[in-house]
Length: 549
Image (spheres, one colour):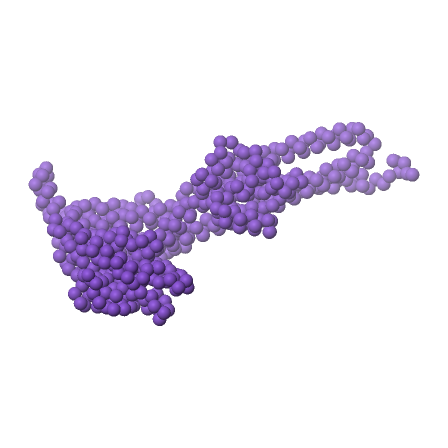
């Protein structure tokens, strides 16, 4: 056996050099981790800033102001508003579009990415400036009598011809301008969502890089401890080496605790929700303050199971199946919480913590995004005047409902409804009264139908209703009830004159030769045409084409 003095000296002399090299690498990786932490926090703070939706709110404000100008122009044409009211509202719209002296409302990034949208807003500003100049020039030519009540009353009631022409121009162009603004809202929302998603993906990638740096640092520290133990085992002064080793371990432990405390602080102040809990026992290792508040808890719970966070049972089952099968879930949209659930984009991992399997969950609040999606979906399917389904949405849903009835051998009937002499209402009482008649007609039809029936406005004064599981006889009763309700409507024009009108209805019940909703609608439309041609204010069925009173 060799004596201690006879042992090779190469490992002993080489070990400190290796330790120094490893320490230098640890310092370099620690610096890299710090830089990654700083950059990640900066990106997370930028993502959480409230100015992310400025462009969307700005264009939505322009849309709302233009809608008010359009409504006021219609009121001016109906003598319900004064020219000065229109001028003031145009000034408000112009001030909303005006960017001089305050920097551009539309961000430079949006102008570069969506130049057509920005150019459209600039063109709208020029058009509004033109309207305001024409209306103001005409208003300024009027004599003013300061302090005279009679003069102010005359100015408020008399509408100059130039102001009326401006109002007509606004009314003629407002629908197209409003439609382009709605498209701009959708475009900017999509652009903002894509930018936010890209930022989130970048933030996620930086989290992965940070995790890799932390893992690498941990491995290097483990290597340093291993080398220190090997050197201590070869040392003659075992007791002194043990004490030094214990002191070194204590220092490392304190540093690790400080690192954990720092990481806990970062996660606790993060704009995302974070949870680390054991799978079997539900023991919570970490939950940040944001998630605790969103769950409606006053303090962090001791136990919490991941499935209990998910509100919808189907989503819960799909989420847990994916997590159990693949060990991870990435950016799945789900509602969390029980009392006031909110939408989140959730990601999860199955990890080992202290020898036990645990769930690591993090997510971002997307409730505002989901609300905007629902609002845009509603705007895309509803008729702005009547509130009913528009033509495209009615055709899509009626096709599905017709196919369902046909597949299960159930009858269904289509009603085509048209207001009689609608042009006469517009000519005698104005387009505003015509709009009122359309809205009243839509409300009366909707009240006469069942909840399962489908109602839509196909265009102008024409409506269509699909009555599933309704035979021709029962549908005729509904049609007669609708016709009677419309005839009893008591509307009053802006000038105080009573306005009454009737409707004609064409019916068509589904038959074997009806292979789709379009032929059924065509038969009902043909019956409607005959009802109009034979005197109006009646219900005609396609099968018999006989009037029913």
